Structure formats: structure tokens, C-alpha cells
Amino acid sequence: EAEVAQSPRYKITEKSQAVAFWCDPISGHATLYWYRQILGQGPELLVQFQDESVVDDSQLPKDRFSAERLKGVDSTLKIQPAELGDSAMYLCASSPRGWGETGANVLTFGAGSRLTVL
Amino acid sequence: KNQVEQSPQSLIILEGKNCTLQCNYTVSPFSNLRWYKQDTGRGPVSLTIMTFSENTKSNGRYTATLDADTKQSSLHITASQLSDSASYICVVSARTSGTYKYIFGTGTRLKVLA
Image (cartoon, rainbow over all chains, first blue to last red; front, side, top):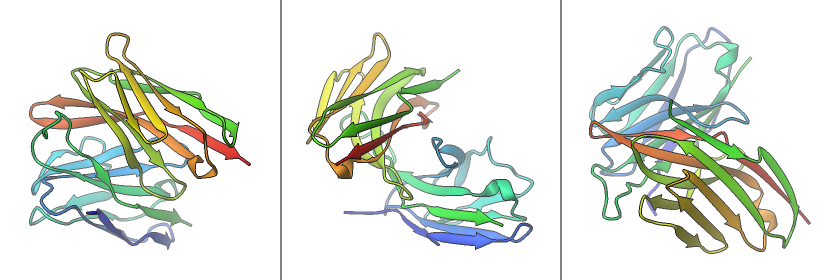
């Protein structure tokens, strides 16, 4: 079964350091999402790509966060500098273009990258 | 404002028992509703996806219902197992301007005890 690949699975860093997460969506999926999930809460959208274009980054803290999907395939999420409040699970998800046969497109998540900022 | 509310926030049951999780939403325009299971430290995994016209959908011991009139959904787990211990997240999708917005609930944390 196709999977969304994420790395690293775990990252421990000190505040003010730079951190980067990588995501490889399911092959052919046009839409890619980055979510942040704080322990005990639901995922919060950071950025949404359609192919290589950003369609929603309204919740992305742009002073320290950046995301890119240069060739419309894999994507990188960067935090610089990291702050204590950035400790969370960073989830990548992807979905195919179009609405699907059943009227509902598939949204598939990766296993996530757990960030701890000390 | 688009919102998804889940209840209860947490639940503890004994192995073998049934339970029902609730999801109420105010999302427009509604497209579909899905339930995800999230094990601790892992990404969410889809259990069911329900569109506007579907009332009930089953996936093994999991049965989801949707009442689009009252904007409520439930996830019923039958004969619970220890491996059912996880967070269950209700996600409602809205389709706007050709893209999909996903509104997440905060989840119900289920603990199944032996």
C-alpha cells in the first residue's frame, strides 16, 4: 500500500537552531499538506500545496517557518530559529487531484516527525 | 465559523465492551466526513469516509453514521480490543474554489482496559 514518507521521525534540538522536515507524498498526489499537532489536540494546517504552488499558508508563522515544494513532488518544511513552543508532531498528508469516484478524495497521512525543542 | 466538536474528550472501557463516539460539526459547504484512528506517536489512519448521501458505513468492528440534517456523526466500536486504544479524530471536508479544506476535531482518546 502506498505511503506518505516523512523524515526524520524524531528530532531534538535546542532553541534558536534550525530544523528541517522532509515529506514525500504518494506518487501522483497533487495536493500536499503540512500540519502541526500539539499533544492532545487535533492537527492544525500550516501550509497546503497544489502541485508546486502554495494555496493556503494563512496559519504558517512566516517569520520563522518556510515550506517549499519546488518540483511539485516532495516538500520541505523549515523552522529557523526554533522556539520552545514549536515542540509538536509535524504531519504531512497528501491527496490526489480531483474528487474521486465516490465523491470523496483520499487524504493520507505520513507517520509524522516529532520535534522536541529544549 | 467552521467547527468540529467531539465528545467525549476521553473514554475508558473494558475489553469486549462497545462504545460510541460523537462528532458535531458546523462546516459549510459540507463535502464529506471521515473518521481517523491515531495511535500514540503516529500519523492518523483513515477508518471511514462518508459523503452527504451516506447514512451508515462499516469497516470491520467500526460503524460510522452520518445525519446531514442535524450535522452529527457517530463512530461505534463493537467488541473493543486492547488495540483500539488510540485517539479518534473526526474530520469534515469542505470544497471551496476547487480546493479541499479539512476541519479537524480535537479527538476522543479511548483507552481499552483488559
